[in-house]
Amino acid sequence: MNAGLTALVVVGALAVSALGGWGAVAGLLRVASRSPDSGPVDADDPPPSQPVTPGGWVPPGPVLPPEPARATEPDEPGPLRGGTWIGVLERVAVTGVLLAGYPAGVAFVIAIKGLGRYPELREHPGSSERFVIGTLGSLVWAAGCGILGAVLLGTSVLAV
Image (cartoon, rainbow, N blue to C red; front, side):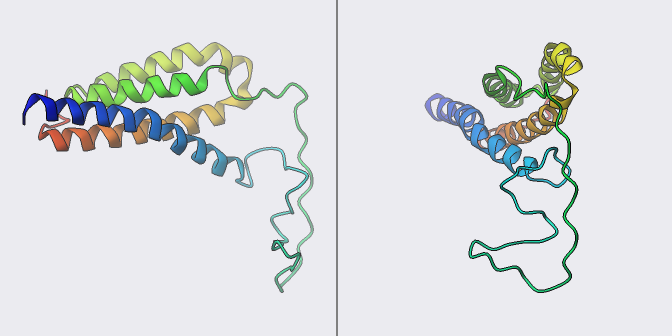
């Protein structure tokens, strides 16, 4: 493969990893926050036991009592600061090490991120679920982009 095409594949894989992963992880976190076990219930949402359509129609069937409201912690933190940019850099690093044929580099990226966030996660344990979901989603996206890029380059991700 000529150098221009190689550069195009590498830059394309890194761009799709960084920018496409941004939307994919945001969507994943949105879906995860709607899970019944995700935390405080939004006052505008109907109870999951009684689904309501936009027209207000309740499907037939047994009506279950609504779930009790979950208490929220008064100092519940929002998303961790800098998470979006850290995620972009994480995806670029993971995709890059896979394109370079050095999959062990993924462990370094995970270690740096975990050690860097440890003090904040220890102080605000409620943020840890969002951190884990976001990190895993980001890693899966980046790994997919890195593997696809390596396949297009005709190289092996598992080269030692």
